[in-house]
Amino acid sequence: MTVSVQAEDFDVGAEISALSAGRHEVGAVATFVGLVRDVSGGSSVGAMTLEHYPGMTEKSLEEIVEQACARWSLYGVRVIHRFGRLEPGDRIVFVGVAGAHRGETFAACEFIMDYLKTRAPFWKLEETPAGARWVDARDSDDSAAARWEQSSR
Amino acid sequence: MTVKILYFASLKDALGCTEESFVLPSGVSTVGELRSFLADRGEKWKALGEGRNVRAARNQRMAAPADPVLPGDEIAFFPPVTGG
Image (cartoon, rainbow over all chains, first blue to last red; front, side, top):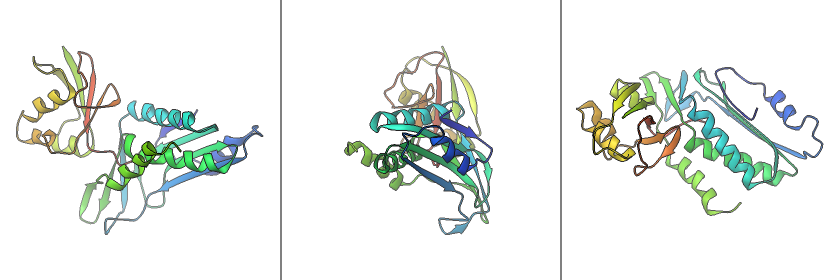
């Protein structure tokens, strides 16, 4: 199971262990964990609700993982993205990449997050003192994803 | 000649619509043409109009305006994604 889209929280330690369990060719595991922040755009955020497009979400994440595996030599990848209502401090997303060395695992982990940010159909609705508001996409996310188009690595 | 259309996030709120079954009118054969047709249905549907930042998917893959729309397709419209 490479990709999971779920309401439930996940165990970071267990996921990291699973990426190298019984695989002694793994020399590096790079991970990213995204968390809900209590501030956004200058206002406080009490909670957020993540909406997604069931079906397309899983497909798009699987496609991103496939692209990463085509680009770098990896031994294992794990992506977990939550949906539903989350509060500050809650985990949103986990990306874990196992490989032989740090170079490809750092790069692949960043690549997966950059592509996920612009291609996976999730949307954040923030609860602020002024009411609920949908988060706008950021141009910096597009440019972060675009730089992978220009460089071969 | 029917397609299923889905709307998400702020677009869903603006339209007051999550999902509809839509009979393709003649002259609508691409994702872009479908979007234009829907945008002309009334005031609130201008949220799909030109100049609005709307993305589309056809059969659960990101789609370009020139991509074809065929009977039985699942077409989705939504704002730029903000996950992660």
